[in-house]
Length: 348
Image: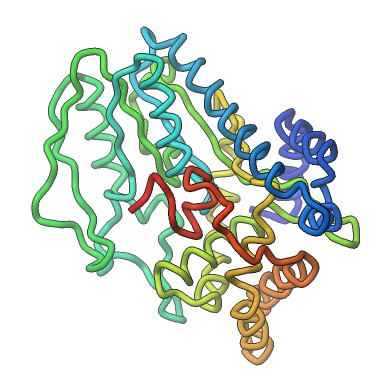
């Protein structure tokens, strides 16, 4: 995608009603600037911000569940998609909880099980794998499984082992019961090859994005992708033994793929969920500040890593500006943020 096309794409996104509402919501709570967020931490009101932000996020999911339940007779499949680290897994689980409370019977299917074996994944000159494009997934098998399932037939679902980088030999047998809804989630769940041949009328699409409407000290809005990069760095460093240097160094793949294969399809969604949490930046500082500083220093010495250096330096600037949350025990286990920092009620 050209720079001009990308600029037009983001201009369209910032004119979406969900973005305007997020901006107004933050301003009403003095959470539209890092300075305002710091005031919450210094003078009180941070716990209230946690409560309000979580409630706003869950209310949107509740409205999506209402819409799906109202169309239940016409629908066969719910698709949850969004860019990396937007919070797809937690959102899908919460959506399924809401649907079940509304009497909707369903089964879930994650597209993560459809990755090709690591040996078949392409690598770049630095030895890095690119898992961010639809080509990293076995879309033909996904489509075949979905077609079989909504047709009332059995499907043989692969099981991907992320530790070995290979599919297990044993597959899972899956079949929907009568009138059951199929809920799938994945990075490229909106990709044409996934749902090819499945009538659009039987699909309900939910898109999640971290729609951050927060300004730094210069008055510039923090890019949504930077919030997601911070989340991924925290999760990678805490739970995947993957340093910020590796995460930021890989992020150019993430951005290139999402601009082409993910972000343009936000307009195809029936519901857009804002997964940004107004209280999250002080939490990221707690886990990431020192290691991100080291990453910036590393990239500053390496030729050919200018993109990674700029991203890391920009994120470090936000963390330098925001106050740190010393104790994250006040973050509820049901918070979407727990998907990244650990301690989630939904993830082992």
